Image (cartoon, rainbow, N blue to C red; front, top):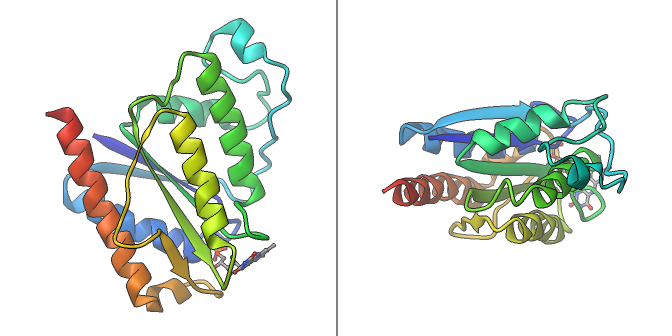
Length: 191
Ligand SMILES: Cc1cc2nc3c(=O)[nH]c(=O)nc-3n(C[C@H](O)[C@H](O)[C@H](O)COP(=O)(O)O)c2cc1C
């Protein structure tokens, strides 16, 4: 079983990374392979609405100047997906938005590449707007016909400077429980 996790923060070792890493620790403790992919600060274009993905039916985006097709392939093979983003002006980062648009459109145009996979959103926030960013991630999972995993609180880590989220005790517990719950669901789905 494999879970791919995407970090949409340009700060590769910032709070979003630490939030994701806490989920990884729990998943790996349950024997689930994890791959954390850093996408923040990468130049990822948004969807061009050319609909070539629907015409071509090749599970690919025709924009090949970035790594989105590599990510589509990785997600297609994975059992679970975790999207992590910092809160930027009360929403997801630009890199995360580009990932959602391109993967979401190619997936829908090709019969639902993400259907029945397990998904979870993870958000780092300094003060406010994190719930809106969290909702953006969940809207994506839901229209992709994925199974969204919850935790003991909405899945936010409070912090400003890199590493601050590790001092957010309730946040830490939320990420750990998310990892446990995701492992539980993944194993149930394989039974
Ligand atoms: C461009 C930008 C916009 C931000 N917008 C918000 C915001 O709307 N609300 C908030 O609480 N924090 C906001 N922040 C703070 C980050 O969400 C916060 O520092 C977070 O922990 C960053 O995660 P990272 O270390 O993974 O990059 C913003 C930061 C930047 C750089």
